[in-house]
Length: 186
Image (cartoon, rainbow, N blue to C red; front, side, top):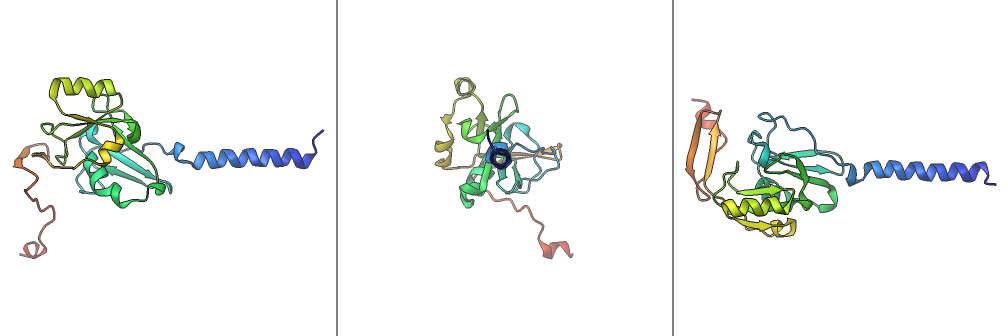
């Protein structure tokens, strides 16, 4: 028969295992983005288009939202320590459901229009990515290939307040998103 101390010790170990499991990256779930209100961590644009959104959740439970996979993977991800990232998610282009980034398939379609013109679409299923490419063209990538992507920007087609668009911007164009403080005072 086991003593009280042995049983208590086993229960303590089991409880500790459950507690640690709850803090592991497996418990890092996507957080709510307020569409049209939440700003992208990188470009500071409001996140409007659900099918292009991405998120990163850190081990410390801090979450970051992105309006385009390029903002996450080109600008933010290379500056992070992988051990600090609990999980990253992208939206499936068709269903708009969250998919773990490292399990998704991606299509680079230079003719597609994403918020920051990186033109990467994400899919939960490889078959869906293939179906998209059959209809629209593009190049399929997995997560490792996405990390090595060149991140060329295509033509930007941004909607401003739902009324006008800014066509004709390409990777060589620059857009100053901040007001010039000198002009502000005049």
